[in-house]
Image (cartoon, rainbow, N blue to C red; front, side):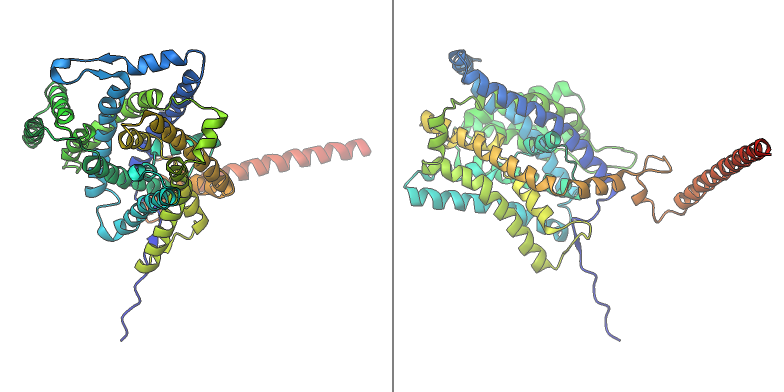
Length: 470
């Protein structure tokens, strides 16, 4: 007897209910943060290009902090090295959760989004490298167009009024998480200054203490927050970029639930810290990083200099081609079939949306061209322009399918029996069907009653009319 043919795996299929709930909660906060990010970026551009532009520079360059601890930093520096550590702390928790309880816990299921994310970083870097090779520019900025900004991307969705089905939203979130991981590795490996081994050793010891306290189930923010600040300060002084400390601490949190827990410690802390990251840390970073002088000539220079042109092409072309191409190839070789409700143009639209590379791209741009402030500002302008083009392009693609997405989202959220669980997750539950049968019976009885009243009213009206005719 022949063995049954295995059913091909579905790519971008329906999420489990807990995963869908987690993704919805996480992206809801990121969407609000993304809108604030947009507002901060626009405010920075207006401020820097207004008659008060000198004050923008003065505030950004204003130094504050204890010099004795090596922390006499500018405001702009504090937002990039200090506040973004909070952002990367949340990214570390996201990554840990994805690895132990999310889409990345199953190697077979994780293969496709991971390959897509890797290709979505490799191809932009390749596009940048080819561009600067042809134009004779600097290779230092190869990593600038590799990052995706999930908050900015979600803000674009909010602005254009498009709600993606949960599978596409989860795919975008997974891409961003893997993207953040590789961005962290890039920063740690390629943008580490001369090492101070004493400070680095102190940071490692601090991380060890942090891990030990977690294992011993020690609780209290008054223990962990001061320790985290010490670790951050030591990491900064070590020469390794200080955001690595945030990621390391995030990865140490437990993200699996024990019996009786509604949320793991990692999920609970992420729920508390994510609004601080999305609503304060990232918008303030944008406010003091996106303020570049914009003019007709500077915008023209973006398309004439190899470094800036490489950034724009990397974000707009490299991201879309890399993610879509990696997804298509991975699906073909793993024999994973696309969800019947979606089509490959949907994947391409999300890939184009991932070309919005704001926060981490700006950070890497500052690190890559730290010795050339003029080129740093030009690369920042290229990031802004490339992200804008990617946003407009993806918005057009997504709008073409907005009716289909709306119908899918409505199906996912429909809860006719009002038990708090969407109906699509209860099709195998007999009690759900019994509840629905009772609901429909009540509706049928109500319609029969209304039919009888309508018939009685009509008959009474006809009788009255007949008497008058007589």
